[in-house]
Length: 410
Image (tube, rainbow, N blue to C red):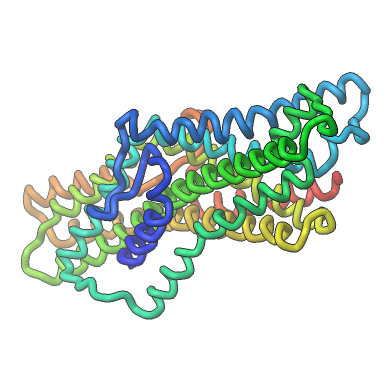
């Protein structure tokens, strides 16, 4: 199954390698993630965050939100008659903040903790290769089922290629693009006094900027999804391989307990080093993804008549993709905690029953000091929650509850 991960990541990299490099990228040669430190290579990513997503999309939409708020404070009620305060305009503000704002924050997080993330993720790949080689598992061609799986997932980046021009054209036609608000609100030009060429040029430029911002944010979210889904699956896969390798060792004459302690502690140390960053990033992602799911649910149910047929399904597809990815990652992590806890308890009982020498006492002390793999989310030590199956149920229930509350308030 690890070969499937490699094939999917390779297909994604082929589709986005022509764009500017992100702080963390995938290497098709070594099949490892790589941290990019060269300022020249990161210049394109910086321009995307600062200009394409920041100045051209996020700042105008924040200014529009401020404008609506000031109107509300001035009138004492919501400005329903204002062209920049319609439900569709507020929808565009929410989409811009969630997509471009979220992509910029994720990119900055990746830049801050790129070394810790790369070393931890690559250690999981290294351990998987080591355990596969120890078990003498032959990696041949993909099975038909695995090949279909790779083909299905390789189509995910094409959704953004379709959404980018669709969102740009629809937004400009409806007057929801950021540049229209800036020009109409602050410059207020009389387009009748200009030639048709100037007007069309402005609209085409606005379509291009919205499409580029959609592509830029899309590849950031695609990279973030790969960075979280693949290590979460690999972590569970490595723990299972470690348990299987230990079972094979028990049947052999050589009792090598030390290597399993070292391999397991490699996982613990890696996530302990990444833990403070991971808790904050995971909490941020849970908030953003939960808000996006609630937002897509509300739009899908209440605004069917506001969108054409080629735009409306985008919200439903986005909701399904986010829900599947989010629950997959949380389930993988929760299973890792349960698997590692059972495995460590089994190791302790097995060593107690087999070894009575001085070396056995040393191993017993080390094994009893080992803790299960636990991933936390939160901000700071006081506000943290361990990811478990109970946490996954509570999180999904919270999304359902807030969706119902939002629908009842509309």
